[in-house]
Image (cartoon, rainbow, N blue to C red; front, top):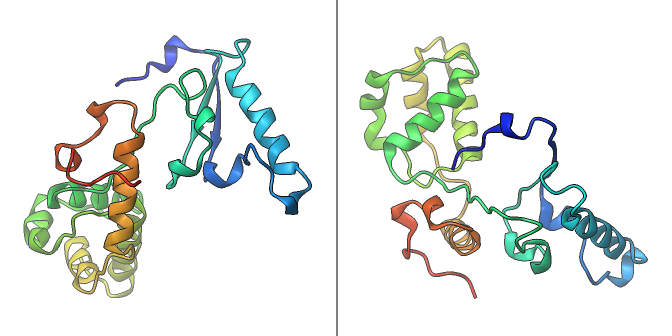
Length: 196
């Protein structure tokens, strides 16, 4: 799905990271004097306002979308839910690492891919890939290794920092919460049961 920003030239973007924690709850806890409920109420009103419809784009990011109040996720407030999945094959992992490395002026090529293909992890998240990219940068500078050698060294002792059961749970949440099946890679369609 392509978004043509020039079609909404005067749109403002509101980005809320860790939305499950930041936007409050409909029912306030006893420890916050009702602050959480008031924040939630004001935000829900703003997101649903017809006065700002099409002029304000709300982007909520969360690794636990199941904890966001259901009425905030309804159409009219959040129309499109786009999941971000980990990689499903070595080439995807390499391309993600390569893009992140290029931001650090570390340039990897297809020969480097062939040299590390068998050791590239799958189910690599952007955060984990960034850790590998930074480590590759560090090794290339400190040990004066080529980008490919530095990447091989980074992968040598790599261990996914996210436990597999947690990763599967998050994938299942993403599958369950997405607004369009087109956003789900074939590898994840029906492969992970949705959490109850």
